[in-house]
Length: 276
Image 1: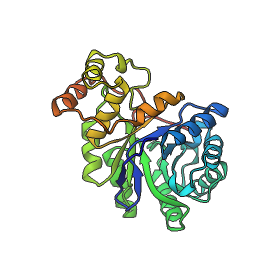
Image 2: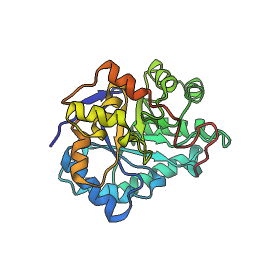
Image 3: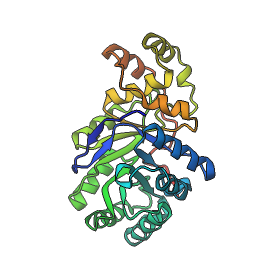
């Protein structure tokens, strides 16, 4: 089993430097994959209300044999649940599906600026943190302006921002903005979600040079950018390999070569995307 280093967030909480993603796993596939991931050494498990698999994730955690306090559970508020009172209710529903008394970190999944309710949701999440129901609060897919609005209206900056990040979409401006605000960047879609990046000659060449897999090269790139990658695999062998990225290091030139594969985003634009 691999032991994963910890990162300390701005609020003092510790978070594993690599996590396991559960989208789009569902049903028994989700439960067995999360169980295998925990057995492999993953301690950061990412889910969301909109994934429809919180109950399965919770069961896998409960039956894993690993103490609850050693598993860092992360879930997210979906768009239709934004707003102060609805956020309080939606969080309670997520915690019940997960079968837990608290969630380690809870995120606003998308800002949905047209709805203009994310600041009210943020106030509710601050209350839940004060009550001990959430250990850390953060956001996903937020721009610098949206991050600043949360801080200006509440005095509380998110501890993390989970964003689309991979060598085809490197987001240097957003990463710099997160770092300037002491926000940890978490990468979703870190392997490019079917974009073919793992077959790119730059990636495969570096994999041969280091004697590792293409996925390990890309995940190591995330670490060296200072990001926390959330990778999904339902295959135990790949799960273990994706966690085994601490025994080699890319040179600055190799990191730059991977960052030079920029093509653009695969997912939604935070200023316009609507997820309900």
